[in-house]
Length: 448
Image (cartoon, rainbow, N blue to C red; front, side, top):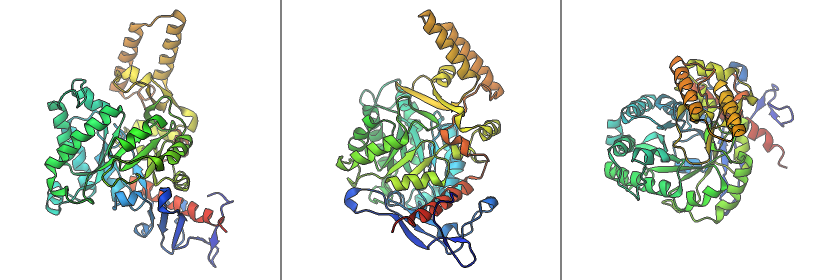
């Protein structure tokens, strides 16, 4: 911890935290997050002993407006819905630790997605039969790439054609799983609102016993990456929680996305004047995403007016994530300057259905270098080389079959330089929360 942060000390010289404090507060009209932390009376856990989680973790909470939407949340640490990384085991582990986890459905088939749902159930010690008997939802969410639904539906939006069997089978798995929330991202306004209505209707059909309870209603997380997307997300969609993703985020995002701090400032300024279209017509709590790595990141977000943070890369480096061990080891060694935003990986993989202007942040490697070289040659020649794109795809296909980490995509955000170990998800949630509590408590000493 930084030495300039003020601390209170007990008679033994150990830094201690007050049992309860308000990190910052405001009246309801400003719609700004209020965070209240409830702490045990013992000293902070030493960071030199991260292998042993604090046994009093259950007594330590950061309660923000996110907990009003998701009462099970004891700390506003949210696992991003990362396709290819956030499976059921990881999502369930984050939720069971007091945060909230999402399965990244991405390109999963219905059968594979069902397997991930079962893994989340196991982590949460619950079964589908339990959920039916108790008339409740499971405390995890499922993230959907909205454009992917359109692609599965033969390229047609819901207003152009009814869902075909591929889409119906995929969405049936989602609603029958009884997730607490669905995360929508990467789609235009018509796609977002159209597919949301389709999913909501299916949820009403399959989970009719939950519709009368606001507490058990399906919650909607909607992600934006540019200020132009804000109004539609809040006023056209049913947005219970708004995710604001900056250019620092690993994985896919808008190529023209501003830094998180700038996008948050614009969002929090404009948000109170908008007319929310969610069930309660209340301003949705805001979560920041992009480049987050530790509790200091969370404390900074809370101080800015957010209700929590979305962590991606930090949770990739856990035993529970579905990244391969060699990918994780590559990330552990990476420095903060090792990532960049590029179209190279989608070009090489042939995953070109993403909305216009979308690229991805990952570790620079040979695939990126060859893409940049080929593009420069095409620019000089004044013409495109279809054979060049074909060669890049063939090289990548071979690299993927060999798990060649010098070529395959390894998505990562700018916070990767602050992460140097593979740590269980429960420990990650604990460490982020503990550090955020410590920072908020010390900074409170500045207020006279």
